Image (cartoon, rainbow, N blue to C red):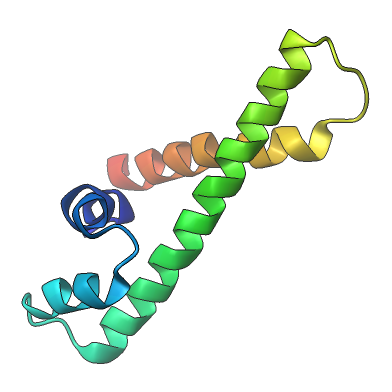
Length: 94
C-alpha cells in the first residue's frame, strides 16, 4: 500500500488521527512494528508535502510580484513531489 493509497483511503477520512489509522491498518493483519514504521513515514511525508506546498506558493509569489534573488533552494523543495513521482514511475515501469 503506497502513501498515496493510505492518504486516499484512510488519511482523508481520519485526518491526523494516527491512532485510528493504526487501528484500520491493524485490521489488515499488519504487524505492530511495521504499522509504527509506516505511521512515522506517513507523518514525515505529510510534513514534506506541507513544505512542498509552501515552496510552490512562494514560487507563485515570486512570479506574480516579479521577485528577484536566489530561489534555488525553494525551487528544489518545490520540485520534490515531481522528482518522487518520476522515481516511483521508473520503479513501477521497470
